[in-house]
Amino acid sequence: MFDRADDSVDRITTLGRKGWLPTYRGSVLFKVAYCWGLRRNEVRHLQTVDFARNPHAREFGKYGVLQVCYGKAMKGSPPKRCSALTVSEWSAEILAAWLERRRPNMTDRLDPFPPNPALWFPTLR
Image (cartoon, rainbow, N blue to C red):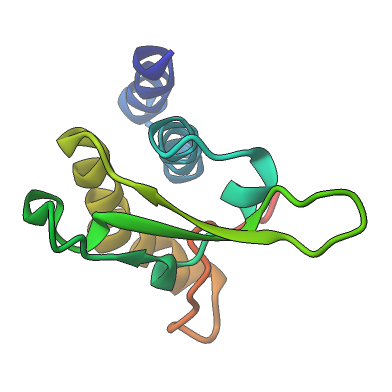
């Protein structure tokens, strides 16, 4: 599944077509949902400030723990807060590549107020 998502980014890039950055964002979103075991609504509400260091697993750097603010709730109650630990190094690397290298490219074009904590930005289309 992940190879298919990465192949679509590579295909768009090699053809010289527009849209490689939103496709890359979708690929990272899919991987983040899988790696941390998140539901659709939990992924949708993620922010950059939800990630923190895990003192027991320093190899993951700034992305050792994910604080989920909009977890699944019981009927009639507000969303639960919970935390999900990072378990694989490649998931932290993918997230670091998105936040530190690719996401700033999207914020320059789509967000007039740069320090936006949202992890995912909607595209114009």
